[in-house]
Image (cartoon, rainbow, N blue to C red):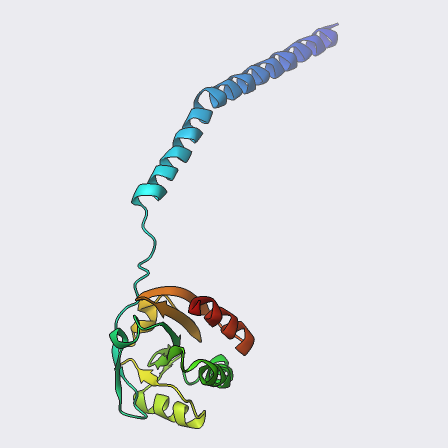
Length: 200
C-alpha cells in the first residue's frame, strides 16, 4: 500500500516538474520574442549605420616610394608612374621558388604590355632567416634576364605597407590607387586577363 502511494507521489512530482519546465520554456520564449527580436533589429540597424557612415576601408592610396635598381643604378620614384596609366608592382624574394617560377611569366607579360603598362619588382624582404640584399636582387635580375626594373627596399617595410605577407604578391596601381591585389603565382593568361581589365 505504501509502495503504491509512493509511486503516485513520484508520478505527481514528475508531472509537477514537467509542468514547471514547460512553463519556464514558455516564459523564455515569450521573453525572447518580447526582448530578443527588438534587440536583434537594433543590432542590425546599428551595424548598418556604422558601416554606412563610420567604417572606413583600408587606404586604397598606394604608398609612395623612391628606390634604386641595384643592377642598373637607376633610381625610380612611384610618383612618376602611379598616375601615368597602369603600374604593376611585384613584391618578391630571390630565394622564393614561386617567384623564380613567376620570373619568366612576368618577363613575357612585360614584353607584351611594355608600351601600355609600367612594371616593377621590389625586394629586400625576409624569407626564413635570410633577407634579400641589393646584390642578391641585382644577381636575380641578371640570372633571369629580367627586362623591367628590380628595386631594392632598404627599409624592408614597403611590402607590409601594401598589405602583403607572402611571395610573390602583385599590386595594380591606377590614378594613385591600388585597384587590384593578388598573392601567389599567376599564369601568363591569368595576368593578362587582369591587366586587360584595367587598361579599358
